[in-house]
Image (tube, rainbow, N blue to C red; front, side):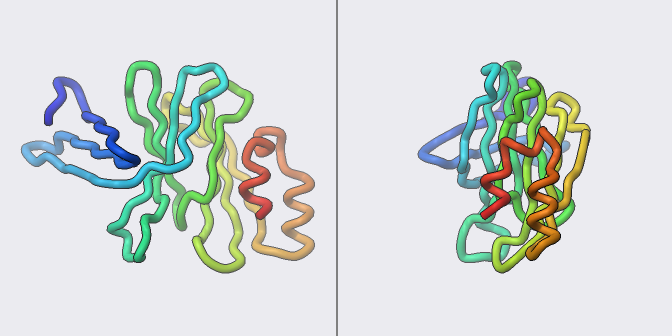
Length: 153
């Protein structure tokens, strides 16, 4: 399948196939999509893309994908680890996501991004455990509230 001006997205039973023109080569990526959500203003829909090809026996949530009203896809990921949770905050046009390791006690790197240009607006680190973690959760910024339950677990 090809599209006149960018990626073609096909959603079928929890799987997303994205085909992109990379020069002369077409790439087909198959992944599971999980944790879908619609922004409060209805202008964005997002989901986590979980890939099977990352070395584990299960699909791993490596990217957050957000689609806008123009059907443009915006991709977000951290500098390390997997995306462990995400949300649309109360501020329109922004997204929050947390990156952590999938097993064990781990820190969470939480990012606030503007969707349209994917710019990093703020970052907040939650230490892996103990008193430092409790203090960081208690002192988290307002934009962090929508993801606090996912990070507190």
